[in-house]
Length: 311
Image 1 (cartoon, rainbow, N blue to C red):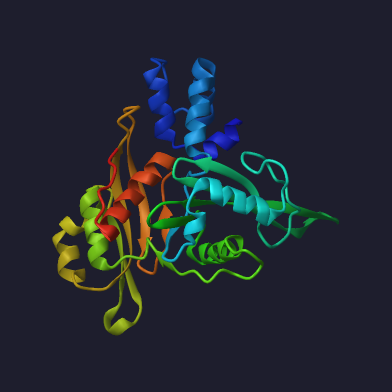
Image 2 (cartoon, one colour):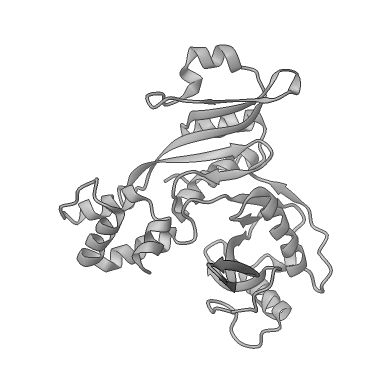
């Protein structure tokens, strides 16, 4: 972990919170690099723990699919791990090792890790690109990593941290991965993030979320309107002008703002995310694994009427 890696994924207010807990002087307008170095000097272990919470999350697009006919013989970490090991033709350990596959345009499995609810699988792909440097041309291959999670149980969920279209492509890779041969397994999926307007309202209510931006379909299905809250407005739904002009108009997307408090660390923040009614989902602020779980617990609660685990 270095300063650039840390800054890329960790929320600024989280670092300030931890520095202040150590009773160390810290100016809130200091650069992130300065705050990071202060935390490393005072307690590098805390810095490492924070980085672990954020390193595979951060500010990200994310899509979750319920697998409606997941093969039940693979619905345990032990059986799924053994299946992946056999599928990849690996004779040695497959968990917690960098598999370092050859970089190709087609994503390959780079790393498999056991988590509480299932397995985290990181994919890697890469294509040759040629860059001009004055009169010289350089060809390099840049790796692209995509994080995915299989959450086992009933129902089973596959989470892909990528845009909606890319997530569908990775779901198709899972169809091949879960099959016994190279033919895609015939399994169906239901996007957890593709909600109705009524479900979106219920999610916002349970999260006590303010509407910061509403994108609506235009009259007669032509065009669209995008309305943003000003700095002093916490929720467009409390603004008479907005409700009078746009109430009843079909939503295309919503940007919501959610207050979040971590009961373990005392960290408090606001989490902003954009929910597209076609199924796309994107965190607009940097988030940790715990924050992601909190948000999607509520999506699960609304969809399946199961009790969410609060933070």
